[in-house]
Length: 151
Image 1 (cartoon, helix red, strand yellow):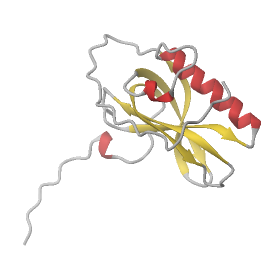
Image 2 (cartoon, helix red, strand yellow; image 1 turned 90 degrees about the horizontal axis):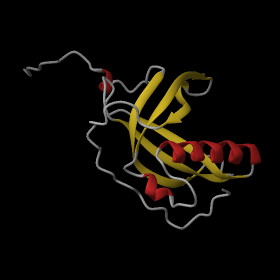
Image 3 (cartoon, rainbow, N blue to C red; image 1 turned 180 degrees about the vertical axis):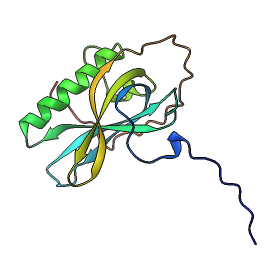
């Protein structure tokens, strides 16, 4: 016989998407990855919620900076610039400099016909609040080769 104590579930134990709203996050890693269709590469930023009931949960921003579709590249470039401004970075910089930086992300919930409910970022801004948040240790992953962005 095995005795277990099962406690009530917490929001951070749930693998479902986060509710819509603004979340304080730390960029914990960046990595360049091949897209599923083999038509390009994207920059993935790992964003971890740093306070509130969802602390510890992640959102992944995937920016198609190298893609055959120019609209995808344009959207990714605008998003990356918005993130840069939110963390106080302007001008040319390596994406590794984003790791360890904190900001707020506005998430919405969308229903993807292929994957179900998912989060989608609709905005980034400088971190709001008292600034007493403890930083999450950065675990940056270096890209296998240097990539030049179109911005």
